[in-house]
Length: 235
Ligand SMILES: [Zn+2]
Image 1 (tube, rainbow, N blue to C red):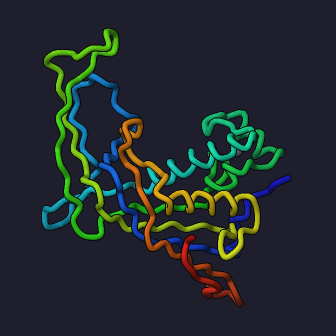
Image 2 (cartoon, rainbow, N blue to C red):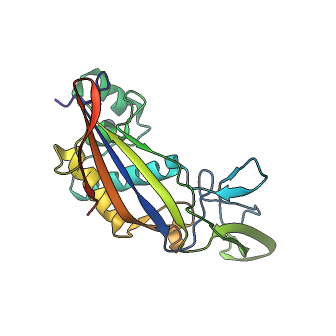
């Protein structure tokens, strides 16, 4: 039985940092992709600074969500059963005795805190945006709907974003200690290989990102203090 509710004490903390580069246009919308044909203007998420300037950013929750669904598809490809994150019965069953599955044991559920924290990624410098106007498609007739236009604000390719992720009580580097560590290692490899998409419009290839200069630092608690036990490149 797998008990992953080990938050009463911190044993190991892994911090992964690096630069995320978007290889294709990036649009980080709120929530679901808009329906084709909906006449809405969609901007990347922005944050306002005190001097009145704004900057787009990639929410950590979006990045974490993408990593979670990628982890789910990896496990499914291995023939393992993966429950829906909102499957109340499955989540309760795990908490009441079965033990948590690898996905919940890594990314959390309504009954278990997450062992992974992904921070909001801000541009390292300027992230230039452009606006694209599209023509709405009528869903029912699969044709162009005259008069329906939508505009989207997108971040141009090759912007760099500061990536930071913490992993609590799962060993990922230098050697994974369990299947969750192996899974996280795989996810980071996919990220470093430029195989992960974030944001909306993924079906048309948007939001492909690559982790560059990925580094890890492993901290362990020794005599009540957090000390660096290992560090290296994410490969
Ligand atoms: Zn689960």
